[in-house]
Length: 516
Image (cartoon, rainbow, N blue to C red; front, side):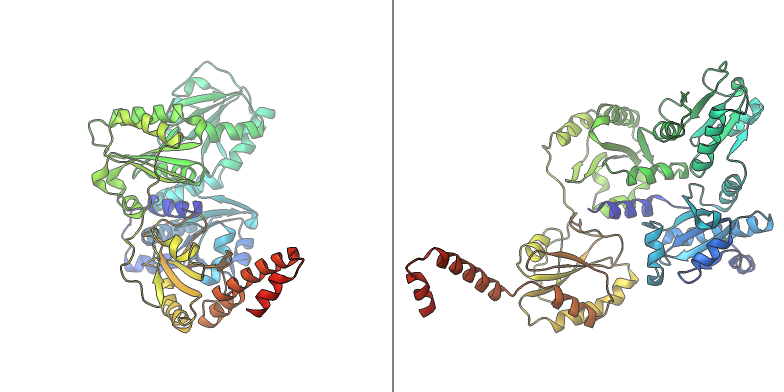
């Protein structure tokens, strides 16, 4: 499974929002609040605004449709408040905007980016997906990077158990430590909330007698708070990123977990995911064991997650899993995927040891191999991709598609036309594979649909990024195909003969082969 595809899937199914009804009149008014951008006007519009938020969406995406009225409402509120914040949107699924999609790393929908200073400063949006939350989050991004706390009431209101909060404690608001804290706060404000105070006694946890300078990181997981006295900029950033990330990420409907999930799936490590019903009477034992596993195997490049099966229906559908297998421990790694279904809490650590030792057999999701595969476009599944593509000795054009993809449906008759045109050429195979129903080998990078690859009979694997017309694709195939099977055999035979001729001093073998 290509890493980017896993990331794309993960973010698409994990990040959701609740739709809010918007009346007809209000919708008409709100439509004017969000700017519509494309490849033609993007750079010009972004350059004009010191602070612009861009939503990259796909028209078919359910989460995008849910977000749309909230985003429009937030844009209208921000405009009426006369804040220097502009909201815009880009149809990232439109082929004309592919360069924008690639430039800003849009692997899932919707993806929201904050662009400041004419687009020179681009950051991810880590806030809520409902109108009021969007507005409040963006207000904080426009104001000071860190807010001053002066009372216990302010601290209690600000340091809440719904995210990672940074509070700098300083004897005075000056000096290298304070200045570096403010620089880091500005840089990381899109993902974390920053505050500062001169009085640690107003803070809800930790040593309340410290005078500082010190940074206290509050979090709703693990040890709940941790301090650092290292104010080097790089050291402070690393402290926040490491200490502000849970040892075990929680997969549920809580939107405050979204940024942790994004980082979890984007980290280049093996992914261990435990899915269990959070209503299971053994849930505390499962949580305890997965946290112990995370501590025990922290040096084995494994990231850990515990998920509520009640929110994981699309995960199970995507990976071909069954709810009857819950409690289920699932590992995705570069070597494959591994399953341990209907397990008990005390089996978690021993099974993960077997994975680390390399004693487990990978699980492969595949549709059944077709009993009849005689149509012009051949059907490839995970269980026959080696036979049809890599080991056939033929030139294979393979399309990865999704059943719901509009571009794939549009391309289907073109692929059929290509297959019919070339069906008399025994050295060419035109094929397709449902990328949502089969595991895709890591040889291929599939970040969207349709994705087209060509594997030549000589063993060259090429991605096709040209025009999706029969004429262009047939030309591409002919330009990159390997030698015909008969020609390849003749070349091999000639190579063998030439090698013998070099050693045949009497010329007898050469004469024999020329006569016959």
